[in-house]
Length: 290
Length: 129
Image 1 (tube, rainbow over the protein chains, first blue to last red):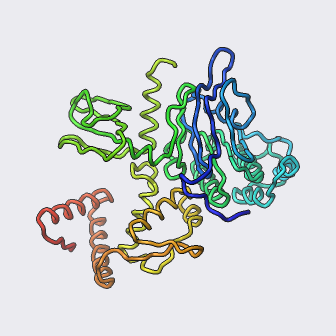
Image 2: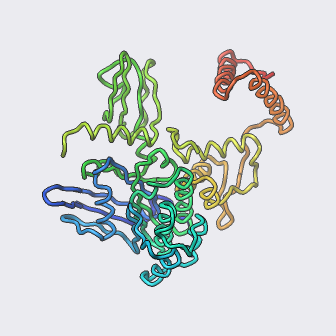
Image 3: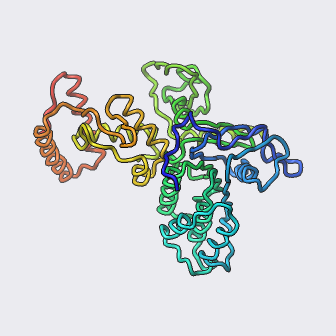
């Protein structure tokens, strides 16, 4: 195992590149014109409402599903853990690791075992007799043991209790720090992403609405609260506008450049990741289908 | 780490380091924990920790020494450690009294802030007694 820490953002190579990516199920496009570059060493969160195309995108990137148009390239070895965390129910965790060792060209047995020990998963019990959370850990252990350059996780935190969610993200981040691998994970648990993800991909109705560095993205958005008004107190794109009684609240994407000053009655608030994602989801839900 | 805060995670780390410097928990010559240690203990992304360290470096508070780690270059706050300790002891007593009087954390924060703000506008020092 190497001990290098991920290169600073901006200087890193691209780990995943999608251009004009589209996938259709019969007449319906599940994914369309999806284009982004994910720098190596990043931990990217893939968010979006149910049916937005998150699983389709991950499946295409993992090579499980062929795209109908465009292209997707992931650099190096790719590991994918599907949402249902599939493991053979008759196999013990030790059997699953043996299988992982045989099926993968590169395999780090110690790394996989460390993961299972960390989460106190018994090695000798059939996976069918493990709890749902423990079965998930077996699937994660195999993924980590295969030493991926790009790790794709579909809803890794679903069905885990809050403590386990924190521990899994903590261990994943430690693996990223130790190996420099790139992680792309889809999730609905947006509140727990602050400090965990450093890159955001936001899908809505099969289209990539937002993609980029999380801090840069949030720094360019501000919420303004003040007296009822049809327009915000600054120039910029209104992402979301809310009006209650005599009060208005605007989430505004500011243009490049220094932050504009606002007049007295308006309060200016920094936007949290949750705030931002919820506003984007609320807006896209109201829009007619693309 | 306050994940619901609008303050970016790397700036929260910067603020924690500055507070540690101000309170004398960290001083010139001390080595900051390695990025991996911070990742393991705080559940924060390595890129975020690196960004925080670069920010501290940019403001001249720490320096990275090739292969050795990141070290504190300058302290923050000019107070004599003994004076700081004495002030802290009185504040501990005051907070204890406030809690005994039934104030919760938010009450205490609000009260302290109002006194500090009033002190600034009146242009006089604030005594915590």
